[in-house]
Picture 1 (cartoon, rainbow, N blue to C red):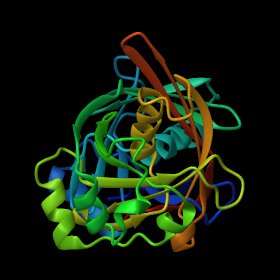
Picture 2 (cartoon, one colour):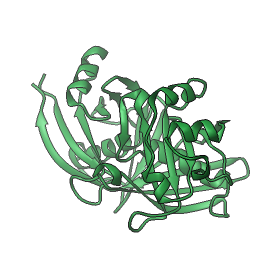
Picture 3 (cartoon, one colour):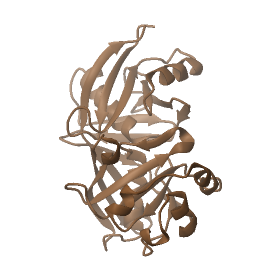
Picture 4 (cartoon, rainbow, N blue to C red):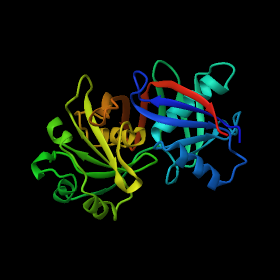
Length: 287
């Protein structure tokens, strides 16, 4: 096969933190079942395939696979793949690359922090707090009643659950049967819980669960945090329709990550940017 692959840590301030990703260079001539087998063997939450060595209609064709199937968009694969294109594929650095994903064209800009602009957020159903508290092994009083529990999407839906404090966030455990009941009638299968209390130095702490997709807990989730960014400005969580905040994730599973969120709502349009640092870990060949 002879394809080159790279392992990177995304949303990581240093190596071996954040969320690891496999980026495979090539694969355009391989059948979908082979791409799926490679993703399964890599066994990361997602594996991406950079199918074009140059730009096609202004961007690089990229597909994203989880071990269980293809997804139209995911956050840390977008940033990690853009990093590999910048540092391993291009001869000269650029200020921005665009990834042509199934969900749409996602631009990534480069600097000390990589930033991706996500799709315009959409807001779906709101859920009953009691059923969600039961799903998370929490008390009803652990949830913040000032804000709704809502299905939100910026390309990949997430159920956003506001909690009161870090203690409640750390006590979360997903009851799988109740999870399956809750997500049956909504688009989201990812469940992001958050609170306005940091582990160390951020503005918010989050955790993300998706047992129905084979992810018991994710160490860093760009797509779900993009949904969170849209949610925060939609509901004026910080008392304003603009945010520039830092988010900590992954502490409970020993993969501490730091994500940067910017969002602004003007009239009926909301722009969402999610950023983070990327670290190169390894490079090899598929045989």
